[in-house]
Image (cartoon, rainbow, N blue to C red; front, side, top):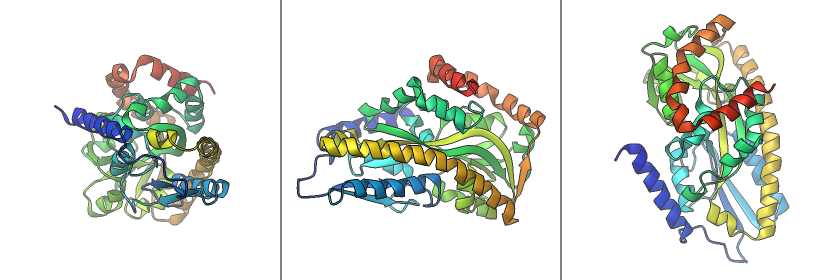
Length: 337
């Protein structure tokens, strides 16, 4: 049995145990409903601010009845651990990168296809459409009920040397999230993909354990990658977003008024976060330029076209597993400007 299959079976087993009473039951009437919500990024990032806003609004709407505990910057656990903890009912809410669900469903791989979405507006059109909304319930049987999508932003490449052409990446060690599509993307440009937790990236760049990475401007600035990485290329080649998910058993056992009210809070926070993420990324780019610590490389149309050509085989490799209908829906959203 390969590693992917073993992980999927483990998650399904955990989700089944959760449904049989593995820690996701309803609290007593006298106890507040505790929602533990860990994440791995800094409080000032789009996700960090949205998590804090959810805590504030949820507790204000249900004073004394709901207690939201937000743990930023991997203070409680990393993303991989939080996936298992949510399925098992040890925590109640997550906002984990869509790439992290690669081990459980091929559907979310659509978000990792390089150069599929030209900008956040295209991502938004897809996620708001019927196909995107259907994705929220894809993993209910595995212990994840999606309530919405939160944006981080579009991705860009950073390295210790300028990346203007795909051949500039040849032989470089790139940190990636645990995603088969992202692995294939880096291999397509001649790089060596290194799957690594987000919290380990700064030190790995500092020590030379990795040479390059891909990320959003907000993550690059808030995690200070620019201190240890002198070049960034404006590529907009990919998307970083999060599935806001809860444990289904926990959620369905909530009092109806609380569940409905919290769903409304999540919708309000999602609307706010998705708009705020654009402003935060734009300001982060300004801050990076002003830092004097790194060089931002603007690529020409011809240079960007070369990157698109280099990674185009990734689409062919994953078309069948993701599904033509899903990819077509995403492409229509991307083209519908």
